[in-house]
Length: 180
Image 1 (tube, rainbow, N blue to C red):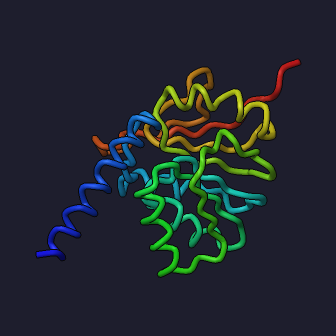
Image 2: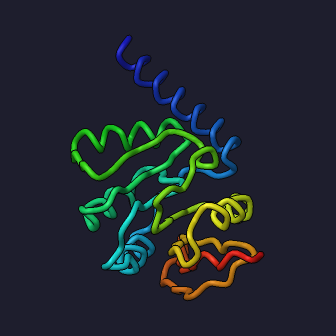
């Protein structure tokens, strides 16, 4: 009986923590769909140098495949919610990707040093808040792939329309040139 209550209590605690962080981040940690994940992986440039940041990495459905696809680059995954972050940590212990670093912190507090690609699955309000940070800290021309949501104020280079009601499009952007 104790075992069942422990499982129930742990599950309930995980649900409550997840609900709390849905309020903090403004969105639940939803994994990227298979079509959107494939599209993003297909749009990874071959001649990339520097770091790759995944902002709002959730359960790691993109971070781990990107680490496998880009073994010579450092993949930096940011996730604020503790339950998916813990899941990614456990998965990382099993897969041991040496080029994957997982942070449980707010990416707004980090500098985007030596970042050549940003991948994100963030809602529009967060992307609007993130846009000035990317414009000031990323080099002009840096590739930004946004799953499902547009970056307000930017014009996409390409929009990949997917046969997927869950994640219907992937936006491909380049950080615009800085204006004086």
